[in-house]
Structure formats: C-alpha cells, structure tokens
Image (cartoon, rainbow, N blue to C red; front, side, top):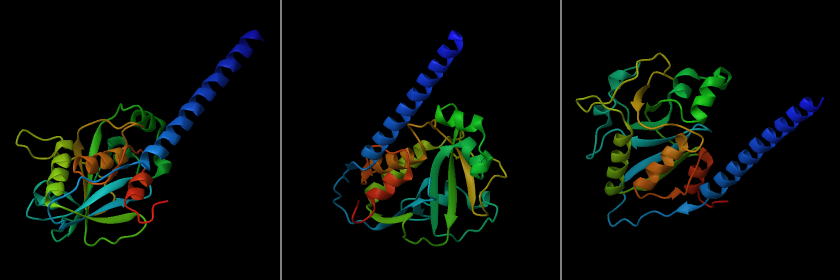
Length: 232
C-alpha cells in the first residue's frame, strides 16, 4: 500500500511538473511573440513584394520566383515538382522537421515517435518549396514590401539553411509525400524542437533580413500578428 501511495505521489508530481512547464512555455511564447523587434531603417526604396503565409499552423516565406537578385528555379528546379510547370510567379519556402513533412500528411497520421523526435530535436529537417501562380492577402497571408538589401539577406538566410552537394547545389529529397503537383522537399540544416519550430525559423529569417519580427515565436500567430494592422 505504501509503495502504491509513493508511486501515485510521484506520478502526480510528474504530471504537475509537465503541466507547469507547458503553462510557462505557452505564456512565454505569447509574451515574446507579441514583443516586436523593429525593422532596421532602410535607405532604399522597398520595391520587392513578399508574403508571410500560414496554413493555420506552419508559416512559409513567399517570394517572387525571379528578380534581378535571384531566380529560385536555379536553386529549386521546376522539374523537381510533379507538374513540372515553369510559369509560376511565386515560390513559398518553409523549414521544418522532415518526419512531420514526409510522414504526417494529416494530423491523424502523426506517430508518437515522430512527435517525440521533433519535440526534443532528435530528427532531421527539410525545406518545403511550393510554387504558386498568384497570392492574395487575407488573415493567413500577409503582404509586405522590402528593399533589395533586405531581400539579399533573406536569400542568404535561406541558402544558409540548405544542405548542399559538393557542387553547391541543393539536395532534393526523393519522396512521394508531396502535398500537390507544384511542391518538392530539400535537405536542410538544423534541428527542429519545441524551442526552434518551423515558425521560429521564419521569424529568424525576418530578423536576419532586418524586417519587423517577434522576439521569439513557436507558433504562426505571433508572426501574423506583427504584420497585421491594428494589432490586438
């Protein structure tokens, strides 16, 4: 009986500890994601249109396919998509845990091992690249204009997130787990965890480029908040 009581006591302590950590985590995320890192003032005209796109959980940075600074087709070839179209105007780039990307097409497919590996940073990562014809601004898609200098920093950040072959080319992940006909996955650097999520990566990209950002985010809401008029 004493052993049972001790066991129950330890279980209760464990549950209390986990709940307490979760509460602190959520409060910290809420506060820091609404705390703004202001944009670095730009001397040149902001002539490049980009979007911050969320699917309700995960954020992508959406960029013009081709500008004077870069043609993303040379980094993420159209031919690597199922549809192989070559006339897209926008490319959405997001970073995340490879297990989530490739093994979890729906939340109902989520395995405990995938979730645990992602949470503790034990898995590998990938860049998910999706091409689009058009983009529209709405609650989950925020448009902003940036300067050439900011765009060059974004390009550098994305390039630095890629694993590359000896010839400096991106590494395509051969898979049938594409979400549609116009996307592909590429090997990436870094580890995903509850402290460095897909949205943390997006936020870090904004910081690195001198754009407005949050101090830290884990979820998409903080990023969208920073680019929403009449913030609440």
